[in-house]
Image 1 (cartoon, rainbow, N blue to C red):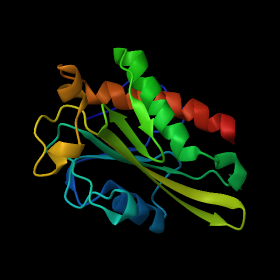
Image 2: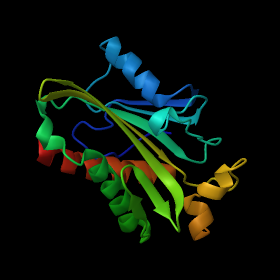
Image 3: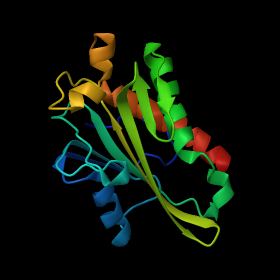
Image 4: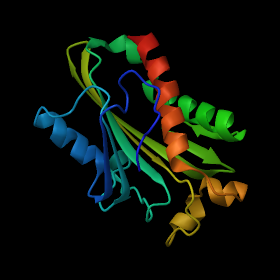
Length: 190
C-alpha cells in the first residue's frame, strides 16, 4: 500500500508499510527509541502477529483485509490540550466513514467504534509526558474493513464494515481521508 496523493503537512508523509509485523505499536516505539521516528510517522501492516489492544489484549488483524496502523506524534505541549484525545480520534474515524460512504457508526467510550453492539474498531493511545508537557503520543488503530470471518468467540463481539454494509471498502482511501481530517483537528489543539 502507498499513500499517493496524501494531502497532509506531516501526518503520514513518513509512511512505513509491512505485509507482516509483530505490532505496529511496538515498531513505532522501537523507531522512537532509535531516534528514527519523525513527527507524524505512520506504520501500517496487513498482518500483525502480536497486535496490541487495550488492557494488554491481543488485537486480531486478519490477513490484509483490515487497517492496522500506528502513528507517532511529538506535540511538546500542555497535557490539558489533549483531554478526550482518544475520543477525538474516534470521532475523526466516524467522520471519515460518514464523508466517504455515508455510514453512521457509534463510539463506545472510551476507545471503540461499534455498529449494532459489535466492535468494528479499537484505538490504543499511549503517551509519554514530562510533568504537564506531553512529549510523545503513540496512536494505534485497528479498523475491521473487509474481513468476513472472525475466528472463535470474536464472531460474537466483532464485525467489519463489509459484514455490516455488504460491500467492499478501499483501505487506502479510508486511511488517507482519516489522516487528512485528523491532522487538521490535531493542529488546532496545539
